Length: 78
Image (cartoon, rainbow, N blue to C red; front, side):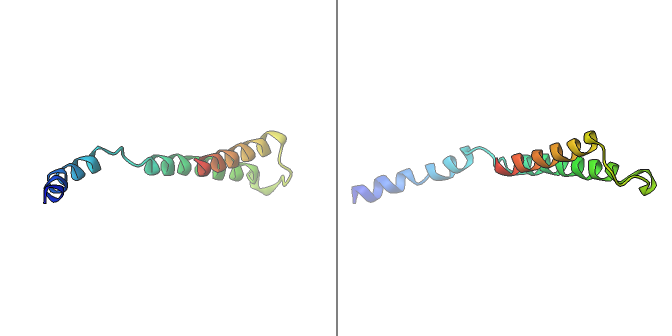
């Protein structure tokens, strides 16, 4: 009986412990990933700009695309 009373008296701690846990980092990581994805889309669109006159991307354009994709991969691994 005393074990039951002890367990029951500790039962009020469970909600307090649940509230004390830190918030999930997932929303922040998803927001950062969204920014990186937009950056990739912009870099990729810039590579295809100028009325489609140039299909050859410059080294700088390609590096921006690679950097954006690497940022997305890094964020996904967190």
